[in-house]
Length: 253
Image 1 (cartoon, rainbow, N blue to C red):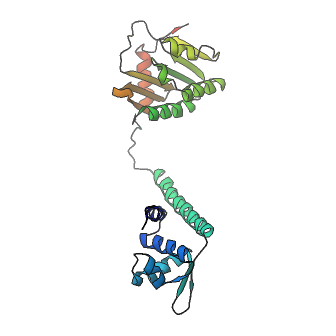
Image 2: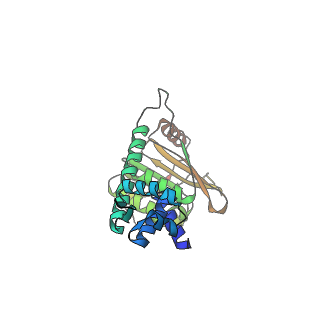
Image 3: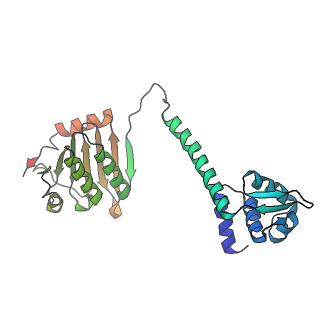
């Protein structure tokens, strides 16, 4: 087979066909109409296997059988095959994810485990921060010393939540961070405690309402790792400890 045909066979396998089914289907489109012998002559599918493969393709709705002597096979059109495989894929996808939805909603037992998660890679931390921020109903505290950790999507989400009436406070001693929000009337920009000296590992802190938090540290090569918890007792207690420690005692401009 040529490289292009190998790729096509691989693609059909990803759509649920076997290698032999893909080869027979392609061969029939080259032939238009063919017998088992015709197909075996232009593929590496043994003639004895063509019959069962063709039967399987017929059940899939991808070919038609002419009860002649010898039996002749004709493929459905490309458009019809495309639609058939698309429908099959969607059905299988729905069946799979419907089951996952059912399983995830089933109680795991009487014992409850708090949801404390770790996420690595700056892009993934960005996405998680945006997701947590977007859930805010009452208040947001966002702090960082690094301008690059205030992405456009984070800045936009903060502005949107502030416009919806959520109390938004930005904590940073870095001018470049503070300047990002200088013109946002609904957002309060404050400084961290004077005694606090920034280290080179701190990333960002996100506090939402009283029960969701994200804390990150930086690694080598701009890597970032965060722990986060949302709508949990763990998050509530951690937020209370942080606020009681004066780490979030701030000075308003």
